[in-house]
Image (cartoon, rainbow, N blue to C red; front, side, top):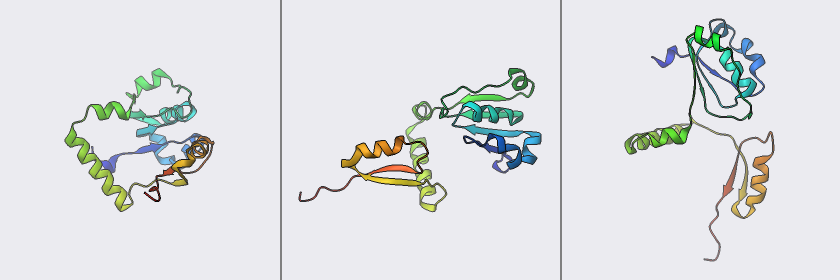
Length: 153
């Protein structure tokens, strides 16, 4: 299958209601592939957005709620839902595959293809405040710990 023919549906919490507006042309026929890390209502919306022979990959449970779907619709549309857990996948890969993967990720990070939003940074000595920040609902970006060289040694 060629990547240019893929129709991906990326879901995120609170956006399910807007999907018909964002993907109006795609929703009418359904999407071929969808991924979801939230579950709950968002994952359920992703299932409903699948077209014939559509495939949904679940890789997280941020909502801590189950997805729901009509099994008949899933069967009639020849659709599938599967789970993906990175640590299980890594255990099945050889050393060369993992080296190629890390090289590819490094290239994408260097050229800006892969990015992440950085939030607050904390010195390692202030780990308690860093954990409290990371636990706050709605915080933006990754909370980072700075490991600073010790002074005077």
